[in-house]
Length: 296
Image 1 (cartoon, helix red, strand yellow):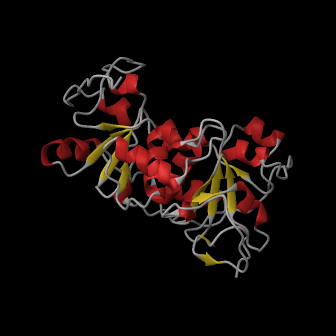
Image 2 (tube, helix red, strand yellow):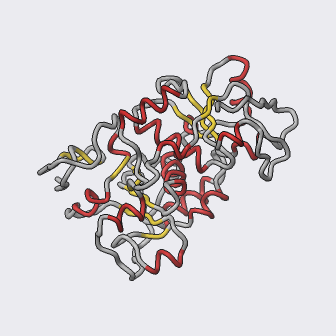
């Protein structure tokens, strides 16, 4: 039995002892790990901890035992259900198996860690979680830091895609007719309303999409996820139904991964990530767009 401090459970493992935890009230609290809770884990085997920051930052200091994952390379390499062998190798190289407990952190307001979390879950690693507050949360808590790169031996991993976790352009387009999906746009309001074009061929949003900016899920000072009750109100105020089958999108899949994570943290059962997002949708002249008015 793993001895964990400050949690009722971590990835379904019963506690040998418990005290009050910084992570409370989330229906799926096992998806989010407080830095203090991670530091308190003494039993072996410890979770696989992934550092999604750039290499130079990782070498300058990281969570003890953390293995660096190249978040940028993973983002560019992901395509729905493709390259099973490649993803089996990538994940296995980090000594991760389908049964591994994995905790990911970054210094990018959880955008990189949420994307890695989502990719791992897509390929069959169910017990993946995000470190609340990321690297800032760890250092703000004055927890131990290591500068020696971790060493490990790759393990065999067989990637098995979870198709329900990905929303394709075709599925999104079909849902505009049959209303089978609630579409959530995690971009900024200016992007959503078509005020900012960025590097896209067209600006605007998917018709009927509900808007909630990804950063609204996080406390701007601590970079930790807001309390469950506050998050539930934020979603309700945006008209987002946590019980409805949902597809989230942004520009390229990172901000929408935070949205997917936040919804699942609150207990949503059917949330997919439209990973190619607005970059793909706006480039296809056959796909309809809308330009809603700003709320304010």
